[in-house]
Length: 146
Image 1 (cartoon, one colour):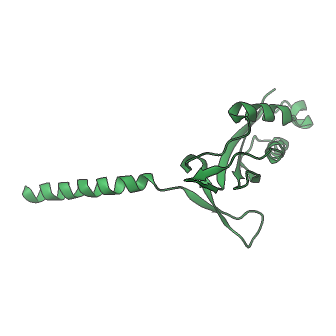
Image 2 (cartoon, rainbow, N blue to C red):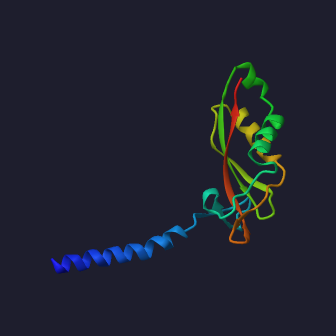
Image 3 (tube, rainbow, N blue to C red):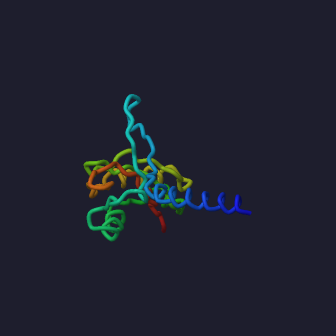
């Protein structure tokens, strides 16, 4: 009985020592942006202290997408609708790069248009870990509705 109590107490102490360290773990991936020779570490959006932000915030982002997005002609004629889920990296200078389609809308023209819209975005405010600017991956859906 005493032995089980000691084991339980040791397990509890080990968990309380490990949990604060687990909160500090950051999800970082390695990305090869357009070059086969260089790689950079990219932080995930939810795991940075200060998240990157579009100029004007969420409302500014929605306005930009609605103003910039053009419905592709053939998709419009065929009445194709959908959502294109894209990812991109906001660099340490605020520029958008490495735009990719994670899940397409079923029509390639909608996917290309979503990539074009994201590629035309102005500089974002940078994401930070502590006081250091870091590259951050952002996932953004672009909707196409008639």
